[in-house]
Length: 226
Image (cartoon, rainbow, N blue to C red; front, side):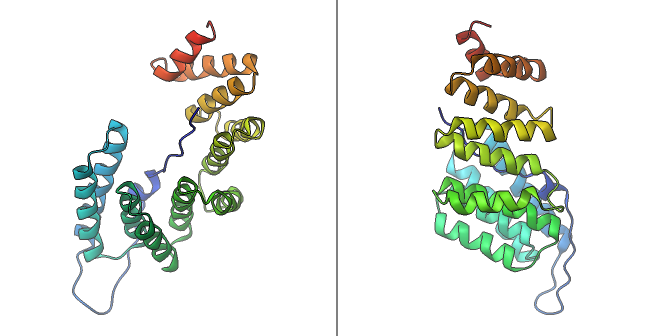
């Protein structure tokens, strides 16, 4: 039973931070933002399609690089790091995240970058460091979605088959964000894995109430006789 960790993008898309350079070539910040949004759109569209053709990621990478050529913002660096990870350039990916964090970005942007950095650390086996980052993000007033940090911790423990620990974390995430669909579904999976069928059924009912077309939830509900 695989609890995949997903990277979250929304705040990167909405945040606009202006950095003025006093030397070097004249940069076009608006053009940089356009390239950044194109790269982000390509990446998120590809994620939603659940297919992985390299050419889409490479186009996203090209636009991220164009954005950086206009304005070296931390969120642009982090996006490039994410795309490099998708292309399996792990070492280079981590380097770009470290570079983004070293710029000392706006606290809200920094918190989002840290979450995504932790996701990549977790997916490359560095779970101890990832859990440390997410634990700190729970208490970080600049991180606007603490339920995501808690949820991602839960997925790490679920992947370790520590389902009871995962259950408690998913419940905490739901307490903060009652309509957090992924947390409800992951809680159903964890409950099912440790034999808590009553909780699993209740959570599946919630998932299907929030999203009646949820294919995986419908499949598990059928298995449980709902």
